[in-house]
Amino acid sequence: MRAEKTKVMRYLKTASGQIDGIMKMVDDDRYCVDIATQVLAVQALLKKANHEILKAHIDGCIKMAFSNQEQEAEKMDEVMRILDKYYNI
Image (cartoon, rainbow, N blue to C red):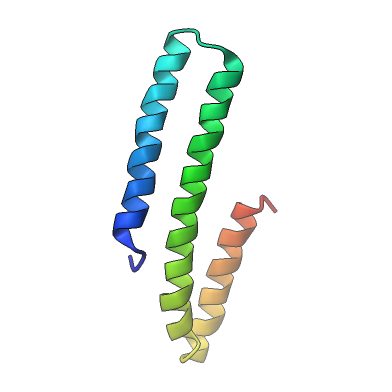
């Protein structure tokens, strides 16, 4: 993986800690809106982590693929599949 690992790991570790907190909130029967707000915060962190990973993929693997026409089509299809999932198409 070519992404900035420290940044990605920070996002993921923070999200993991927040998920642990959310599970405790659910177990403690906390207010639903407070729980939902924390879930949204975790989603934002995961989105940031994924953004860093995809950015690194485009900056590295995709750029290299453009030097090889056979790989270019394959990598573009790969990126489109990820984007389709990202945008729920």
